[in-house]
Length: 359
Image (cartoon, rainbow, N blue to C red):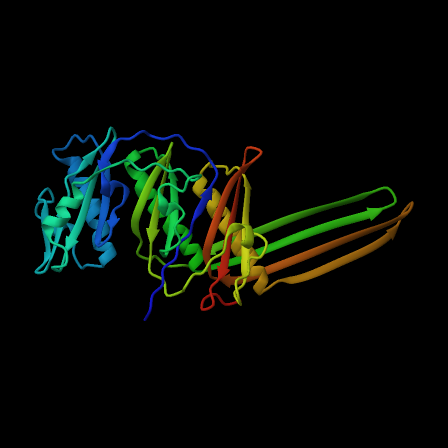
């Protein structure tokens, strides 16, 4: 079965300050390089326990590796995780690179070798390479992966967390949550529009009540890249898909969201989220798109109209729209800007052909 890869790009017009040119192991920026696949675990840099930070960060990196490859292996089977090499089976060994520590966080990097294509010595050299810490510059598309469209992936973001060591994991959780919504969601929405006209009045009002329940399942995500901007951490996660994703630029899809015979919609967020989180605003735009997609599948409209005479003629109309549908979509692109100090996010979604049935 042929598998295709594509990407979701966040086009962000916000200017962020750089962090300077601090040198870090290259795997901090890019956990996956060519044939080398690795997993980062983080922990607080200071621990009251002996080797506490090393043990905690290595356990988290090992857990990610085991989960991704779906190995039947329990962490408590490891006798001493401070060893640089751990044997999972007769032909699989996990290696830990030398940890990296900044002012707040210890980073551990776990990778495995299960064939002779890459030697342990070659990988050890790669894990020791130093690079400038990766900072995000969306105007210049730096690093390049921010604007590339050749992998099946989603870009996620997390603002600084109360425990800095949890920020990377939060980007994973946010990406997983978005993918679950897109994979399959049930939408219920009821909207009311009331309008009255007359000799001395002309007014209208509307009310919208909606609910989007995620029905998607957990999938394996691989963190391939990351970059920082002020208090934000942006991370890219790849996943396998059997759907070929073709795309078009923002200037086109904002006006024409359909693509071939696939229904397309644009979800919108405009304003400031109550929790102040950028990731929450992205989720809101995606939910709004799913609601619009559900309306293309099912919508029941009723209208009541009344005309009365009381010191003149008056009309009152009430329109009710009810939608209830299960939908599945692919997030094709995001465009994020600021307008009059308000965050504006456009999310382009395309309906998946094989998932989502009207209820």
